[in-house]
Image (cartoon, rainbow, N blue to C red):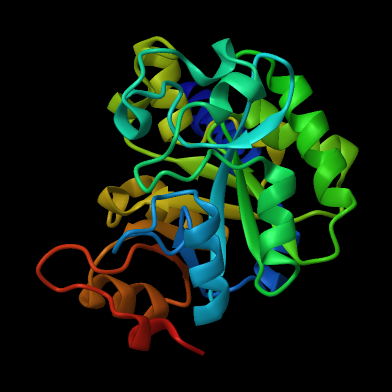
Length: 277
């Protein structure tokens, strides 16, 4: 009987794995931008996720990846970190301050932290957007407010998140919208989830919740089993982050993937001429 039971068990495990990790089939045919400026085209005086960085990306004609969080009074602001320390030199968390209080925390160039509404007004449909919904307190409310603003926006946009629950929200409430699942190495999840959960998220075992159209992966995962399966078994639509050199950019584009990039970084820096249409 073992010769029947063992192969049947292997088949059941394989089918369970496929059910858990498969992305949406429609992602294969999506025409998403090849280039997104990571947190806007920042550097050279323009801080990340600033209106100046977004305006510069629009002038260069490249898509923009940006991050959204909730303030204490429920406003959607564009800011990457959970805390203000790195960019603003303050110890508070973003979600512990009201919008008015956040306005008093200038970015390195002296400009203020923008709201999503202000970012959308600045871009004004000139380039596509990839909006990352940050995980944290009030996730459902953040998803709802973000969707409210984006549905009123006239330009092209897609959403992504590390949190499968956020991606699932858009799957249920806005199924027509392209949605991406961000993925990284297991250690990047520790602190938010236990090690077992970190392994599961890093291997995309929660895709059954969100059925993403796009897998946006940490470039350090290139060559790993998770990416080989997504490419080979599912022919998934992929984006790689964060690309910081000409060589990495050329490699990503040659593979037919989208690149979430930063210019002017490292020993082989990407220049504006490399990304202009």
